[in-house]
Structures are given as structure tokens and as C-alpha cells.
View 1: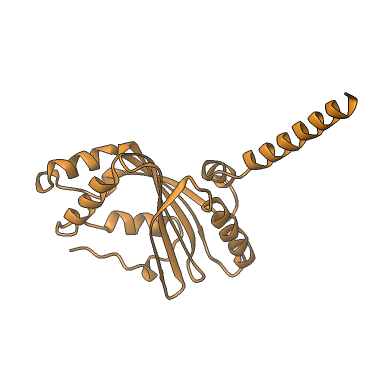
View 2 (view 1 turned 90 degrees about the vertical axis):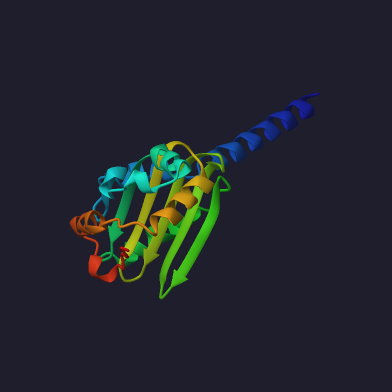
Length: 192
């Protein structure tokens, strides 16, 4: 009987240790909290109104998609000569966070060392957040969290397609990037 009790206790302790280690995986929210005032990082919240959109030129579904977005939180680490080792560590840390199964990959792009991933958390019809993560050995790294209410990926993608044909001024975005210390001259921002 004592051996049975000891086995049950040992199995319980093992199960608790496994559950605790799984629960300790760092979340993106925790990463943001840990880095919001960290040296070398810049954090800002961007209202969706920074890019003026003429809603009269969008379909009703695209207007609904636009209205479902509340804000974009951006955390960036511009690369300098002094933080190259930290850049490698933080890139590895973020890559580990995004291996979590809750993040569904929408698209990825890799060109000239500039890597971008677009992911989402939630379901296609009720997205909790859209995440855009990019890093470059020349510019640094950045994570943008698009936060909203009941965002729908199909509608957001349709809205983005409709916006391609409108005249949206990226001046506000470019000014904000310069203010964050990001080298905007290396960024290509297309305005049509």
C-alpha cells in the first residue's frame, strides 16, 4: 500500500512539474511588459487614424473591418553597433514565443535579410490580435500587435486590397518611424 501511495505522489509531482514548465512559456504580452521601458527598445501605441482613410471609397465590409481595429501597439529595437548581440538574443526569444501553437501563420516574407511574419491569435471570424513581426540585421526588429474587437481576417484582407487603390498618405507613418529612431530611408513605403 505504501508503494502505491509513493507512486501516486511521484506521478503527481511529475505531472505538476510538466504543467508548470508548459505554463512558463513566455507570452507576447509578457514580452511587451518586460521591454516597454527596457534600454534599446521603443514602444508606442498608434491610433488607426494615423493613416487617413476615406471610408466613402470602401465597401461596407471594409468599413466594418476598419471599425473593428482599435489600435496598433509597436515594440521596436533599432539596431546599433552596440546592440548586435542583444539583437540576436531578442530575435531568438521572439522566435521561441511565435512557435506557440496559438499563433497561426498567415504569411511570411524573406528578402535581402529582411524577414517578416504575419500571424494571428484567435479564429478567422473573431481574431483577438494580428501580429506583424519583422527583423533585419541592418535595421533591427519590431513587433506590431493590431488589436481590435471581433476582427475578421477575410474582411481585413479585403480592406487592405481596396486600400491599395486609394490615396493614403504614409507621411504620418514615416514621421513616427523616424521619431522611434528607425531608419526610414531604408524603408520603402508606397503611396498610390
